[in-house]
Image (cartoon, rainbow, N blue to C red; front, top):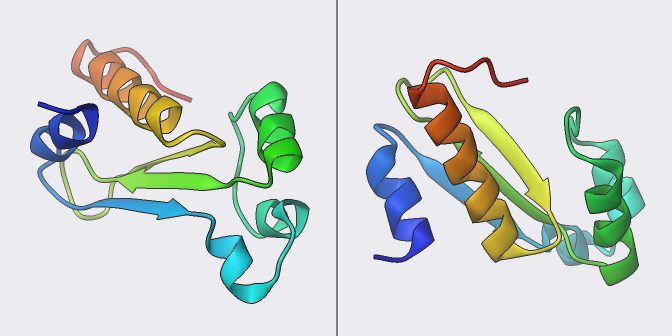
Length: 97
């Protein structure tokens, strides 16, 4: 099973993956990030998004259609891995910021 398939199977509600949607409107990554809540995203990841002109956003709803997490990254694989870590932490009862 791929990591993305694992994420989808672990969520009771939707999983949304966006890749480079800023390019659809001729927007820079900086402008894209200015319109998103990136709290908790490490600065090196944001810098990587800017330098690679690549913006990946995963929003996933593990338990209900109103409770969700969002991950930003410049790599699809790294974003999916981060989402799986968040789910694992949630299942262990750890507080996720």
